Length: 221
Image 1 (cartoon, helix red, strand yellow):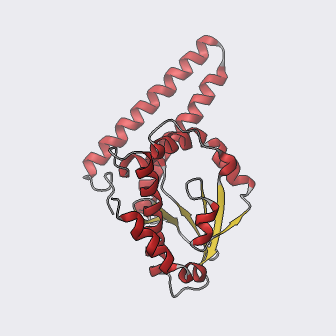
Image 2: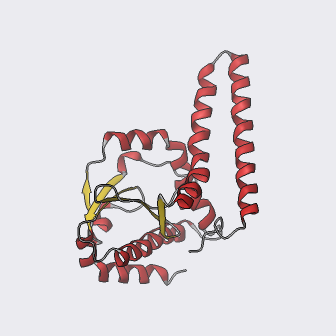
Image 3: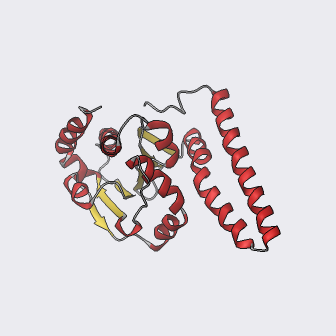
């Protein structure tokens, strides 16, 4: 897995997290001061919430990986531990986008790379769980469209209310992630966010197609 953060030494990782923590605390403290002097306390609350949503992945994801609660199948394909036979998948976080995506890539290359890493991780997941026919995969994405998802074995399902609330709370996080993915300021359209699910058997049936698509995209990198 080519992930610049995890390739660093523990001392380097700690220094990076210390810088992020210091900057975050500084921003929050200044927002509180401004709120007190202006009397508009909503400013402090909003900046605190936005800052927290942006920096959380930089601390949560490494911690969850270390504890084994999430697993990487590629640099931009993560899974949570199974619950009641359901595995939640994630196509990379802001933390991963920042440390994985090559800054020299243009917008199209970045989007293709994200999808390619998603497919590569999916193939690794299929290989590891090919004998476990009871597993169901569930995930939400604004990168992969419904047509592509259906071609690789997923079906679209209703996004639950809690997930919509989480997405709304993380809007600025998604804004930065989407802008990194497109290499330009790109406001995410949350109404286009889709939730997909599939049985592992359905993915196995589409494995050859996924492999072809992955190889096709991988040739560009």
